[in-house]
Image (cartoon, rainbow, N blue to C red; front, top):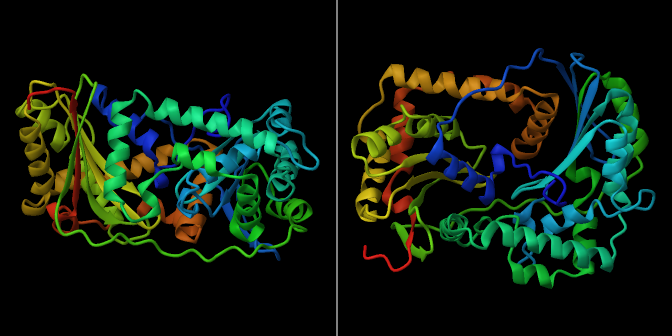
Amino acid sequence: MEAQGQKPTRRSTLWITGGVVIVAIVAAVFAVWTLTKPPSATVGSITAYTLDNGLRLIVYQDTTAPVVSVNVLYRVGSKDEPQGKRGMAHLMEHMAYKGSKNVGPEEHSKLIDQAGGQDNAFTGDDMTGYWAQLPKEKLDLALYLFAEQMHNLVLTQEHLDSEREVVKEEWRVRLENQPVSKAFDKFRDIAFAGTPYAKGPEGYMEDLDNITLEDLQNFYQTYYAPNNAVLVVAGDVRPNEVLALAKKHFGGIPKAQTPSPMPITLPPQTQMREETLEMAVQLPVIIGGYRVPGSGHADQPALEVAGLILSRGQSSRLYKKLVREQQLSVGAGGFPLVFKDVGTMLIFAFFTPDKDPTQVKEALLAEVERLATEPIDEKELQKAKNQLTAQYIFGLDSISRVALELAEAEVIYGDYKEFEKAKTKYDNITAADVQRVAQTYFKRENLTIVTLKPEGGTQ
């Protein structure tokens, strides 16, 4: 869980934040992306309900193993934080494990562990999520604990003071002495300027100090409500039994006056935005991105195909051109970085200090923009479509992953049925579609570039 030191961090592909993006970038220097996970053994049936208090319940029945995965996702993330209080959604995630009326501090995770399960949590730009996986006979316990988190948390100044320091330490680990992370933060600040997406869930250090107990109480009462949440139960369960348990634990929780989401749009951009950072770094990097639409836009599947053609493995266009042929870079790649309302086609290139950053940049952009002028052939297109479909299917190798994908489909797209459509969404993409989206979005007036190079360099 992002919130607590002993729990691993987790990030969803729909709302990737800075830290995971940087991991992906650095990994590209050393290895190609590979598909290693086995496919899920079976595909279960899906049943959906809406409780009287607005809680959306989705049940995925799969009797392959006697386990159950429970996910609770709230339609609130860092983008919903007020100005001057950035980092509050993440801090609230931490506080969710500091005790409720009937469950003591840290007892939530201990009870899950004692039941033979595991749990985790995450804060994203568009959502906050909590999950647990445990033996199926412990489903009642899991739902009880998540209902306590939704309605009965006890927030105290003592816990706020301690968890604020934990969050600040996470902030330091991610940013201090991490030049590439700082470069990505700068890129994000420029690319999404004028919107809440300019800063991720980690927030600002000075804002964390400004968050009061009253701020957290108001945030909790506003957003942690059944009509602002999706509950997914996946595994060896019967839908009618899950519905009865959900009503038992969540049915009495009242609705909240949660504000209606306001669509976020980027201010107009008419020319390329560019900035250079100088830091103590051995391997310079160029991080760039072309503006693209948010996650629900019809062009997203074609953009994903374009991103894979550019960057998947040593046979990708960027690797072949910049690393093998021109020998300007030691690693290059790119992928769509997409939030609910806005997005960017992220591109990057690592290079040694003896290379000219301008030459590397121009080579990187020329190869990306070549998609707009030269149609891809059918073999390259089909390979990309096959890889994307396989990547999605192979990614559903656990019941917890299926549960998360269902919950995200309901929160981000507004309909869990998008989960079922995902495996066929690339089928009808044509070479003309890829060229069209490249012509539409891969233009320099849509581009933001940040170059990170060593301090005191001559170039």
